[in-house]
Amino acid sequence: MQRSSKENSVVLPRHIAIIMDGNGRWAKQRFLPRTAGHKAGVEAVRRVVKACVEKKIEIITLWAFGSENWKRPKQEVNYLMELFMASLSQEIKKLHKQNVQVRIIGDRSQLTENMLQHIAQAEKLTAENTGLKFVVAFNYGGYWDITTACKQIASEVQRGVLTVDAVTPELIRQRLTLKDLPDPDLFIRSSGEQRLSNFMLWHLAYSELYFTDVLWPDFGEAELDKALAFFASRERRFGCISEQLEEVEQHA
Image (cartoon, rainbow, N blue to C red; front, side, top):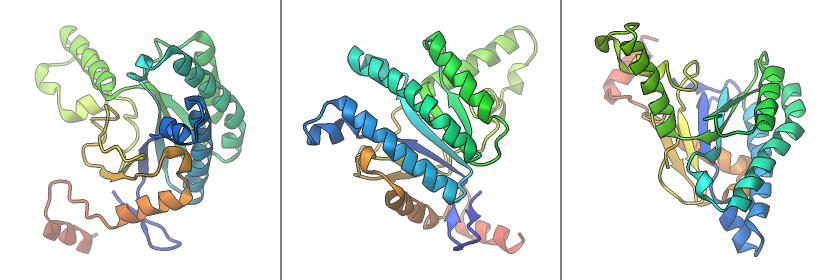
């Protein structure tokens, strides 16, 4: 459900999901190594999270590392792992002071013990915070998310805990990551690419999709405002027609 900001009456999304694309191209344009682009991308994350806190956005989910990104050169993958841990260690206390709750979603089976400890510490420290929910998708993929849910359900059916008829879209959703949070209202992808790339495939079924040519390291509050303005201009019907929505609003 869309909500209105009390300060400026602009309709804001509750949940924003972002594919942070373009770090490598940003670096290439400047004749820098790809690692420089990823480092600059972290600064963009800081700007966007700060802006979301100030605008009182409830949830933001950023895709930091996809399950297919293991195919990249080993040197780059190793750097991304190190950057993730370093950023988590450096930022977690600041985020905690801002009352931000940090969650990490994705397949943890391929992560090192050191990474798992960093994740556990960050989540434990911020678990009771009531401000922005900052979700980082790391080693995450939509196929993995849905497949994992299906395996859990299949096991329950096999053990007689569930019947086949009990399997509904609502049940599947309750086996997915972020089952306790609303689906993203707004999806943003930077760098000009216009596809979901296996990100939150189930959750983005009714999201408004916003694509920008701006490379992620150059993304900031001004670009976020453009995406929010786009969202505010949309009529979200969820399968209904405009007249039905108007009737609901009249009786609200």
